[in-house]
Amino acid sequence: AQSVTQLGSHVSVSEGALVLLRCNYSSSVPPYLFWYVQYPNQGLQLLLKYTTGATLVKGINGFEAEFKKSETSFHLTKPSAHMSDAAEYFCAVSDLTSSASKIIFGSGTRLSIRP
Amino acid sequence: EAQVTQNPRYLITVTGKKLTVTCSQNMNHEYMSWYRQDPGLGLRQIYYSMNVEVTDKGDVPEGYKVSRKEKRNFPLILESPSPNQTSLYFCASGGDSLSGANVLTFGAGSRLTVL
Image 1 (cartoon, chains in turn purple, cyan):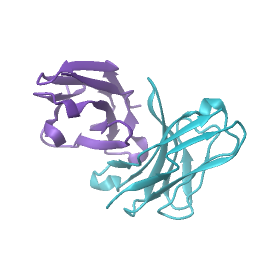
Image 2: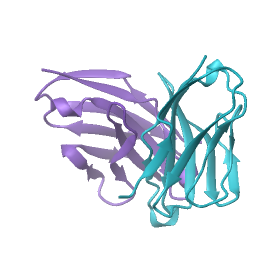
Image 3: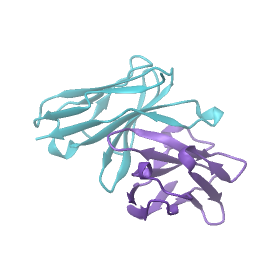
Image 4: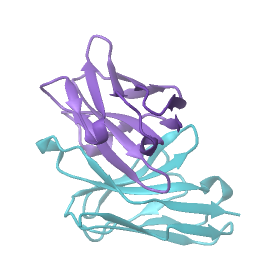
């Protein structure tokens, strides 16, 4: 069975600082991995995804994530935080053999940005 | 504009009063799903539908019903709401998993309070 663990329910960084949101997954088959972002009072939207190929994936708004199979991780980073990055971030996993119904979400990490 | 539309966005009701949350998508997606979001628990799947007239239970289906009579619509029905169904609800639709597009498009959410 697949699962996702997001380390830290709340992360706070200063504006301009590095953002690092941690995600570890468990999957018995090669995974598809996703990061979704939820801005206040909005639904979730896709930030980036990894399916196959290059392990460093670039997304919108300067975010990127690296798939590390040996560490079963898919951490999300951004070199310099902006106030507009304040949101909740969800890591999710599915796999090549399953349908959209089997996307498993983590519990979310709320990112706060200090001026 | 490609979107998933949910209504109502906000609703306060009383225990036992039947209600329906509507969901409509304009992307011709076969897959649709309902999630509830609760603090610290992330997104939990309630029901999903792989196509018209095909629905199945997710992780937390108790107290909910769905129907999929048309491809674009997937209403969530609470026959006899209870306070533990107070939550933020999201409808989502998704593309064909065979294309690697296990990407979900989410509605803006419906915040339900049951007194």
